Image (tube, rainbow, N blue to C red; front, side, top):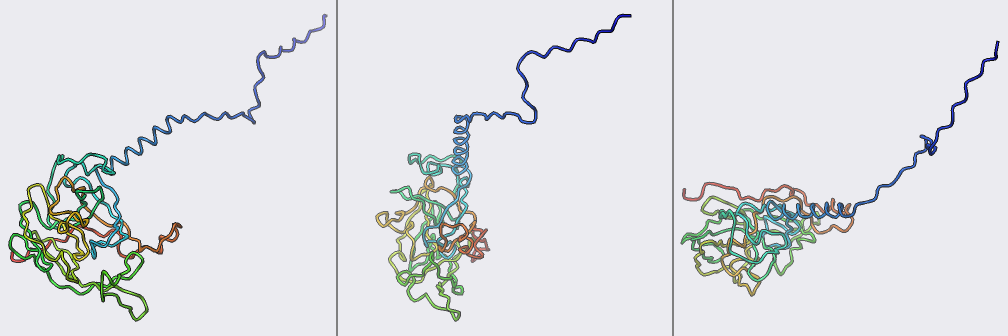
Length: 300
């Protein structure tokens, strides 16, 4: 009987040897910078569009709207309530024009963003007269269509003195005092003013100055008359353009939006370190609504 032969060993597989599965070689994908830059550009355009058509943040740089707005307040301003015009675009990149899309007229008492005729700076003021109104100011009191706008004295408001509200003697003579605990306060005399639609809000008028008197003026069609709530320290429709005022009634095409609410307020003591911002927050200012309270107008 012949000896049985063993089967031949299999031939080795041809081709490259596979790398062990336990140590794969990772390949880094190349960065497509064009896609990255396009994404950033689209994101920037979306932010600009939102700021131009919907809402934008706003910082209060002056005390012209005290006591209702303070230096250091951060606000949200809605861009759509009165329609859109050249002033709606972020950074005011469009040429001035009287054209307005979906135009609407503000209401008495609205706090609005306006742009003066000789610069692209944003001002924030309150609407106190509408198209067709006759407005004058006599001894600091508004006279609207021949009738005095009611003002009622309220208790003084004590605001803590801080870097954003130093209560300088030149602006608030005799109103700075030290409390028993050593803290400094600014004691502001308060008047409550109520417009014909019942919009009511606080104003400050504590000294005699030239803008306490303004001759009767007819507000033209497509315009509004605006004033700051801090009547003695506001360059508004009463003040000439040469004195950084608005030079009379403001075209509605130069009204850029309506102030809605305060997001937060800093007292000016903050530094570059974000941890310092927490201590600089003013208590009670966040989410303060800026639309005026509406009451039954006097005499109705």
